[in-house]
Length: 109
Image (cartoon, rainbow, N blue to C red; front, side, top):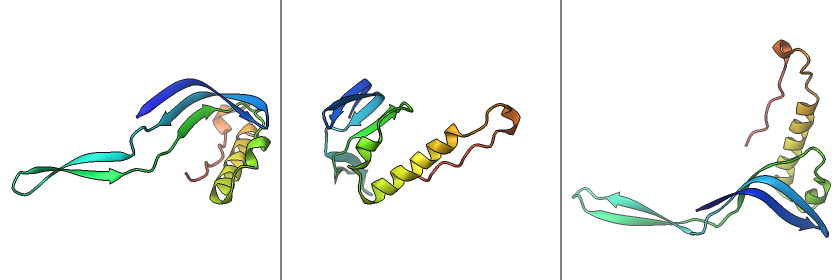
């Protein structure tokens, strides 16, 4: 599995955007596990894994998320909206008195 950190550049509707963070792209689609039998014999179990891309990025507040929203559908769009509401609530937290900070609850992952 490859993990790469740095800046990711991409284009949406002709506008070049960038995000800083990490991205994970597994190159294999099979996972191999050792299986030991009752008699001590060793065999191998092969499990198929669907390919995926996983990113962890620092998203600046002024990032044009509206360009991305149109590409989301169904559960992804619902999850996205929950996280945007959570971020709005984070920005609204009054941090002037640290002893009385009430942090918003994170959406379920």
